[in-house]
Length: 390
Ligand SMILES: NC(=O)c1ccc[n+]([C@@H]2O[C@H](COP(=O)([O-])OP(=O)(O)OC[C@H]3O[C@@H](n4cnc5c(N)ncnc54)[C@H](OP(=O)(O)O)[C@@H]3O)[C@@H](O)[C@H]2O)c1
Image (cartoon, rainbow, N blue to C red):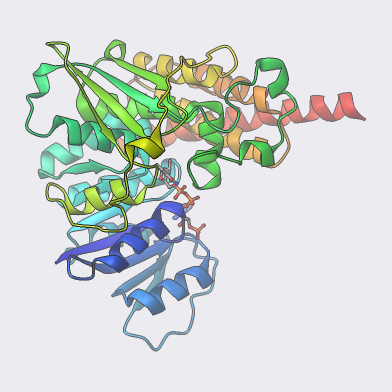
């Protein structure tokens, strides 16, 4: 029986994880459920799964009066305590944004296996995360479908036989639009993803292709390849979840209909596989045709900017991530337009300068500075827009 803590249980990944666990009560037990502030949703999950612990990260939300055996706590420290809980085998980090970095580090330092959906942890603090895993001998198993695919392709192979990784990208809801057309995109257009049903932030990241840049950086840290050996290609059907090319020219890939339940199940059961009749539905005929195209970097410059930030290293990836979080929020709130997101992120990176991040405090400082710069840029762009429309 694998005891699981789900951080971000009320989100898209968290709910998918609970569906997987509900189908496999002989394999997995929910020990902790944690969310930010959606207390009613968390309450319902607690009623169904009966965890030992329920956590609300936002202290301002009143805790429900509970007579159940579940212990309710709140606040950031309670979230970190849940990540360190010795009663847990796997911490599934499904938080959104760089706020997931400290829980990631805490879980690894406690020696837990980390089932990682929160890619922003690795982007903001990659070196620290790897160091924490190494020091405690903890495992990181990715939940992102692309990185899960790579892990599955690498099973039984030598890491030094890998030549190149090619991540696949759906292309997002705005694939095929040119830069001019993107000025007219509304949040509701960008939130309509053709193949994946996800939380709002990652859906916008998918529309801008910032998500793919975050994933290139994630792959760099997880698999130790230089940036010039990690590519990305648009594959609109989202059936092939990445390619691994070996030194002899052989290429492996992992396939499946797009559902996050499969990589979640693999991350929870790794290195074993658990039988699942619901997920066993792949049909090559129904999947065809499988097509591929290059990323349109002119229309979607946040991809190139992110890969560049990753290759630059130091403070740049953390600034890219923080600037992007602010840009996404500003776009979703209608304050800036779709193509302006890249300006917000670009200035955030320029605003932090260079420098190595050797501690969590360093990362949080860069994150804070980049957010302040990005907020200011978004405000300026919003004001300019009001000026032109009034
Ligand atoms: N969705 C996907 O299919 C998918 C696929 C691959 C990777 N990912 C990655 O998985 C992560 C989660 O994505 P998602 O789509 O599941 O996000 P989501 O639907 O927005 O859910 C986010 C979860 O995190 C909680 N949360 C937000 N801010 C928090 C904070 N400051 N402290 C504590 N908890 C907080 C939310 O709680 P409340 O509900 O209380 O606000 C919610 O439970 C992201 O890093 C994303 O890139 C997602």
